[in-house]
Length: 207
Length: 207
DNA sequence: CGAAACGTTGACCGTTTTCAATTACAGTGG
DNA sequence: CCACTGTAATTGAAAACGGTCAACGTTTCG
Image 1 (spheres, chains in turn orange, green, yellow, cyan):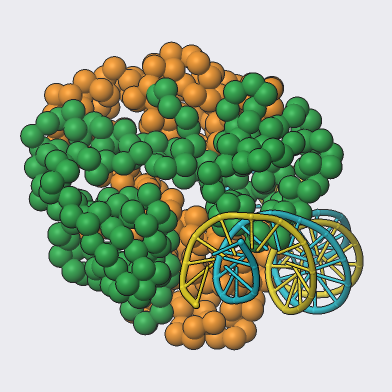
Image 2 (cartoon, rainbow over the protein chains, first blue to last red):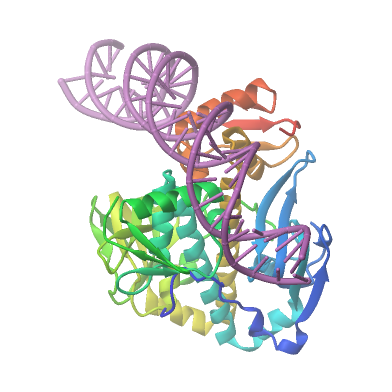
């Protein structure tokens, strides 16, 4: 596995089916993409916007299973199911690429290497998600942010290049943006990092 | 997908290779299973104990990528890599089932359905991990715990059966055990849950 | 050009973490 | 069979940390 471990744009498997079978669909805020128990017709990649996956319980309460963000694929597991196991609702106006399930499955069946590729992408997703979870086990905001930066960093000295806003980073590490700014200030003060435009250089200095 | 969504014991792909090629290996505390850049010889399932996956940075600092717990598989992504991308060290005495990489890959190559099965298991892992991450976005301890219980709950009335200790639950939801006990007390007080031996019954009453 | 989102910092408050202490067991070995 | 040890379950009190609210300059973009 040559590529970086924590990728900004996750790899996608949607190009496994020929591009002309992928349809784009626009959703308005609150529009429903699919509902729990609907037969699975397609898998998706979110091009823009934000989609919430919600599960309903027997007693009428709900749990948010996931909030898909721009660039993410979702409902992968549905490829192996007959019906969706949750609702998908656009939080804001969104655009999704829809990959017909049947096309996808037949593409996998036709070419064994394709299944492997799908598995490889999922495996790297698992790796990435596990590390995100691990980062959230760190309670201290500065340390958590530092760990996140370390994961992002490449080269010598380790440098994290940012293609997203700090607010986005805050959401990813599970802090408010204010907490992130304060953490940044602290880390910069004690010399752990140096901020340059659009990138952060890490200096050795284990907290 | 018929099975429960959040499984306690994750499904495993290790039985894809015939059982007699799977070797058990015992590790003492702090023993190293593999090191970053070692050629990938095997994939693993942790039978007992705890294994930490650690990544080293250019400047000598480290990041914990994941802490594998009993029953979990790990290093799946290594199946597609030449070398491990992190160290694996036993935190405590542990037992791992080792699946030879070559055996595994040839099993996948021989039978296309096997690759699909591997992909299916990975996809459900992704689903599970995403929901765990989502739960951690809930700041309030009682609400977070409640969301976790809802995910676990089955049947009518929704009931969560516990096969782990509350301390384990605390680690999973990212709280201290004290915070979990207090959250439990609150939820029980306001009638959201009823605790019986080894199980929790949820009552409707959205917080 | 104006609105919206981003970046940043201060102050205060609430919740969770920490530290501490106690009870309840379950397993162990004498 | 029981004292003994270690872990789980609980609860209390104090401290610390991050969330929330507020304010303001700056950048972005239609």
